[in-house]
Image 1 (spheres, helix red, strand yellow):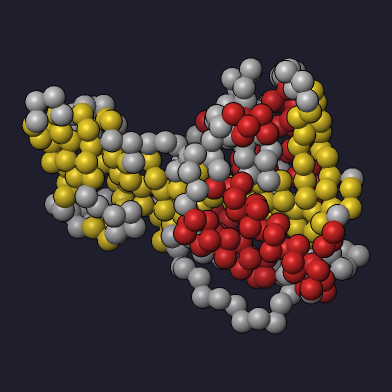
Image 2 (spheres, rainbow, N blue to C red):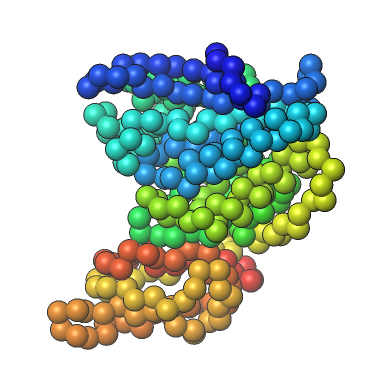
Length: 326
């Protein structure tokens, strides 16, 4: 462990040698509490997928702000804050979703006990360290290259009673409750929630990009979360935050392409849309033809929108949060 200026302490959780030379390190940055027993301990995790940069930037905003606060108002830290800004450094270095050389998804190794691979070892070390140091965890993610997402928190149904009140503090547009599925069982969020550590999974923007407006919104939400949980005790007035749209599985409509071609959208993410309004068109550039005019199937809020124009039949184009359960 290394002490730093402005009360920032750096912890090296695990280190290994890169196959091409150099060190691979999992780092935790810690802002300690002025109390012997912190009110709460909140951890922020980013970079599980190396092409998801929104969370890495959010960690930068958090560390920079908390360092200044620690230097000027150290008594504000009634709780403890941990920031894990780049937990999959190899993938981040190459800008890829998967851990290079192994081609493994680190966020599908969290429940794995027997895999001897380096990504699985890092995943186990991360889970163990979070268990020791955290009362609440926020896991930052971005979307893929195809779809752009409004700031949202995704919750698995079996944990919704504990997580929804926390999610409401985070300045999100949407809180989306999912049914449980086997695909979640190897993820960080699922495994920590099973271990009784409330973990919020944030999804926003699009991969390999940084949407500064969304990041600023989420950053303000994270500061609000720290204050409302008692981790930060500040006299400044609490800012007004968004009240998220809470949606359950039957309140989501997926719009899919009926043809392969180029999708040309003409709707804005976050818009309140009506049934029958035009989402966009799918065109055949070779023939100069419009293959399909895509319309909204119901009234609601557009919270996912396709950014990659090239489509195939059945490709997801949009998700709508419905005003009424269908």
